[in-house]
Length: 484
Image (cartoon, rainbow, N blue to C red):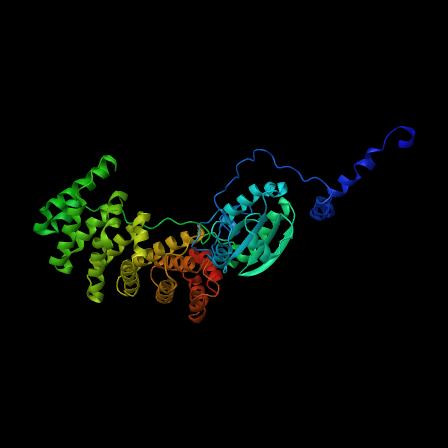
């Protein structure tokens, strides 16, 4: 028809594009682009590239790292250390390149070989920057300009740009050439998945264990006049009067209207009272501290004390009494410890200071062994829940556990023992089950905690509580699935 002057039919002129639009054509496109680059003029990058979008640590469209059920993400390992994360590293020397690759030996890395005279390379820069932001600390993304790094180009025998090389666990995993943004994103994201595979627990449907939990707190204010009376002559101390006024004003007018008492004077008074008073008379002093700890300004002060001296002194006194500790002192100390979790700053201090963490763990484990007072066991289970939930939040946020593995093992062993012996309190059983589940959820698959659960028959211990109450059956089922 075109011989008659009617032109080439549209279905013929559009045939190449029609083929390229098919899945098969899309697969061939990078190879066709590579083949044509030598005989066609390369596309010129836009004069002004838009700034790369840097989502807050996203991967495959989900916040954090590996996507998971119900929006839960879990961090498997942080193989990148000692270098800034979430950005592209520009490298000119072999020494720096080797250091970066070494830092990613437990994770993954990508090298983007480019050059100043390669317009197609510049088209890949925004996508590469975005991938670096998505990777965060889970991968190292490197850019090497061959016009400035001849030694690097010689080592890796790069003959064309852009060239990409990926490394997984210290070994070269893939190499490809071409300015295909789709191929770049696909290959790099697949590398992320290979380096940080999703935890098996993320594929389960666990309504309780896959959500964030608020801490259990004891904020009820007792009759302050009676509490002060129990202090005897010390009840007239200015520190007690200031605390009393602060609590009353906060109750009636709100936290904003309540001026802080002199907290250094309060701390000195509490420590001196613990040292001077008999153990069976300490309850009202500790209870007063419990009441004010719900205010984050107060908890922030105690968190900033050297070695958290006031809190540490309270824990040390209660723990030193062992089985002779008065019931009132032990339970109010447990309740005070639960209230520490109203402040993330103070809660962090509990785990970052070894001595304080040891004291906290001793308080929980010894209190769970109290066979006489169910309220003590309930408070201890609540504290164990707060500890486990705080560590669980770190996992959901893809941060390192605050609790060491040995601490988690010791706490879990104590919780399992207490669970097997608990036949009275449903609240205690609920707290114990949830704490065990939160510690086990997302735990390293080859770690000591999983080994402990297997050795102690955790699943059987948990399963035995199905008959305890119908209200707990769903929770028991969830904990069973993660404690295998």
